[in-house]
Image (tube, rainbow, N blue to C red; front, side, top):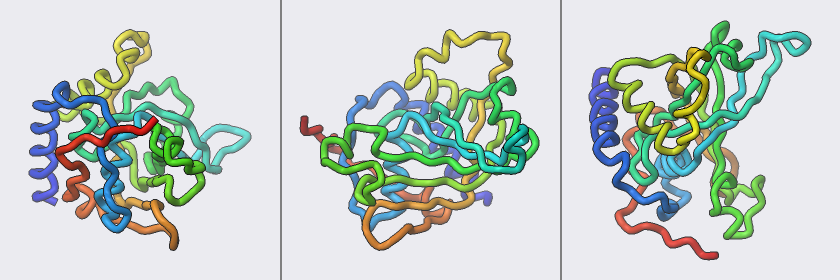
Length: 209
């Protein structure tokens, strides 16, 4: 756990340095055999996720409830792997999290140009998608500073969101990563392997239009 905290501090420091340095291009997708790298790649390429909570609201109390949230793990090409969010308790799913912080977060390369350009349907296993299991935690201090820069750089509209909504920064505290990027069923990755992975090559991937 101590080693993971040190690694996270290193990632945050590197992310702060590179936040505005990397171009917003789709970098080369990792081989499907390198599952942890693939998960990191998808998390960094996607700007939003579908988050499922356990609803606290009638008439669906106790049932899964999915909602869309803007996310960022840092600059495109050099993210930390941690999905950050900008939340308010006025939001219905955030109210669920206040009662039970456990959630799952889903992201897919269907949210980018990749699958469309390759002719992959969003449900095609080759259109890589990931699911994070874990809990959503409020953050502050240095990590919140990084989250703010990471989110506002990729979602500039957030700067002008109403100040009276009591916004706060949060992260997905990942306990398991599920990856579907090829035929043969879902694969899992531990948080340790996920955060150790280096998803990007030095040469940007050129999109084919």
